[in-house]
Picture (cartoon, protein in one colour):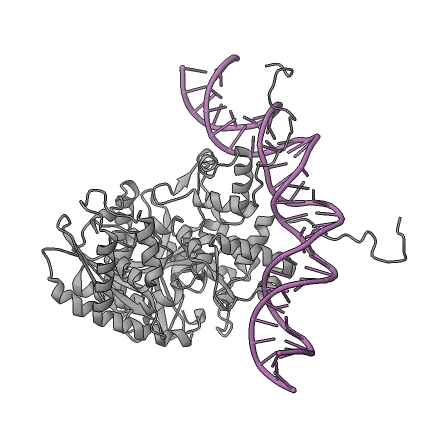
Length: 276
Length: 276
DNA sequence: TCCGGGTTTTCCATTCAATGGAATCGAGTA
DNA sequence: TACTCGATTCCATTGAATGGAAAACCCGGA
């Protein structure tokens, strides 16, 4: 190629991205390049997913490694770092909620031998804070920290119902809420409204679909002020323990969670590593 | 050069920090301003702890909020954000380890009714990956994501023993490893070496101190290649279940964990939210 | 309602950390 | 050995980041 016939006018060495972008946003995009399916990425993949030039990706990623936010194994591939995890475990509502509710999850799973999970709402999705696998567990897996859609899950519905009409209407309006593709009819706005109203009345959500071999049940957990801050969800085989048995158990657990949470909100047991 | 008599030579408006510092490092310092004792900070506190000018702290913190890395409640105080937590839960070794070992922790706590925890090493400390509280639990609290010192804990000793002589010697050399202040004699280098050797021989650590009402026991968890990747720790009252009973139980659990981990390393159960 | 203080945000002239194309390096591979 | 492809380093260029100061904000008290 000759330098005379080129359309690129000024020939700048280090031209910044056209629209100019904050470093932090770029770094965040690098972190967000990782997801459930790809927890390990090469630099090239990072660069591609984050939409950054290789050199920039390389530089930023190295910095993130130096800060412990990313890890890099000998083979060169990146992964999310432990330091990040340590920091993140300070995030509310994880600490107080998990601390208060974890023993109850233990009990629940001990009694029912089914999947149990604790979820909170984050925008128009839910996030799994903690979970226990029952021995008779069906192969259904939401991992801790993962997303759960609001509409097609019982725990999600509980959070949706608690989220106020604004949330519900927004969700209906945008209409693209997650729904199993093979499930025949995605519920209409009216149906969804009715479903939510039902959950509000009953203070519990029971989700049962003809095509699915499982029933999911969800109950709200409330803080001292009566605000729903989380939901406890359970997944049981449709042909197993009848829901009529599960319901009171879950309701009781939810009330216990309310109390545990209220009690824990004040005092803070301070760590005493010396006595280990 | 100066038109008036002032000692401040050039009078620059936006002078950067003397030594010049990467944005990412500053942002990281902001995040690290949060800890167990202060999970919520005002802007002023962040600015002070991170050693940043108010204006800079304000700008960066807002950006972090926009990215979901920090949360800000109506009163204006900051906290670590949920988004960060979601990202962080992709971190190895949390995912595979917790997934594989969690059911075993459930069993352990169900049988013994004592505290159980899963820890991994991070440099010269250990980090709690998961824990279960026993019903007969003593008020000892390391929260998930928190740090645990290597030397004065059984699980820590296991990781220390597995960490190779370099780690041990470094720790001895710097000599400032954490040790309960009131515990009379901090172990000498020789004592520590002997202790570690003992752990290596027995493939289990039992820590019993005269001043403490608890005994802590730790066993190593190994990956497919036989490398110690984590430790399971248990804390039992000195006057409760005898350690001779606990030992075989923990050993068996550790072997089960090895197998669960090896099995899980290959296949990945893929999430199937449609069947909820 | 208006005031005094403490905290937070915005403004903006200044400048250096960040940038990305190209060259270099390095581990595979034929 | 020569070739390939991914990652790193180099470096001239520049706009994103900076921090002091001023403005905006938020309260509790008068």
